[in-house]
Image 1 (cartoon, helix red, strand yellow):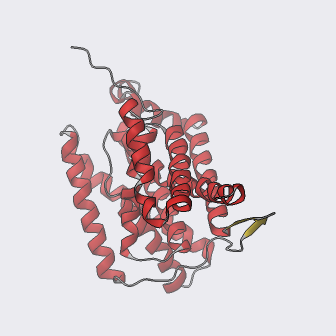
Image 2 (cartoon, one colour):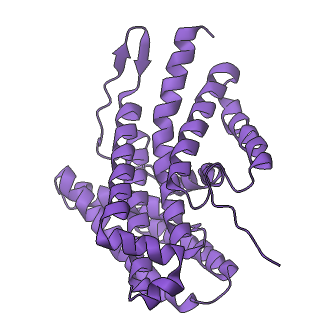
Length: 292
């Protein structure tokens, strides 16, 4: 592989990593807010993409309005799930919440299959697909623009959590819910908002992925492959999700360039495993200290 090819695969990997980071953000938000891993993240991605498709193809909405329709729909689903499925589990072992999210994922997957069917559907074109050419380097347009959309969403949420009153309350409730409750913060509302934000992030990511490839219930499996990114970056670290997403995206692309497509699912995760053997709590994850 010459340096031009290496540079091309590196750029493709890094720009693809932005979308991986966006999917990982959905996991991180739920873990920071509830200390549980949402195994239904992929189904939220899938459902959000189907709602956007429905708004545009069935209801004949303009593209921008179909995106709003999809985000509103997934927000409503997140509110219902948090209120009637997860809130009754407050105080139960974390494993109970994990099992419920697995069951929730199966339910959403079956619902989508029953309503829309299992065939591949063509999503409206969300991003420009014209390749970008920099000298001898060619970059797919959809990959390039998906990176900037992902970066904008992550940056917007980061600013919201850092400077808005509600965002600060959500961070406080996630860090120490008992103290936050004593200070007058509505912890239940912040957890509900956490699910809404995570659902919307998943819907955006799912819509982008489906528009690049195609829309089918198999889209939900995309999120499981991102778990390695989440664990590598740290379950409670937004910055870790970004760094790990870029790293894994780059490793996947370089592995394909050097060893072919079959190495895509092997080489990056061998590297991830090696890093986790040294830092088991992730690159930027919080190290829990237990006192005996």
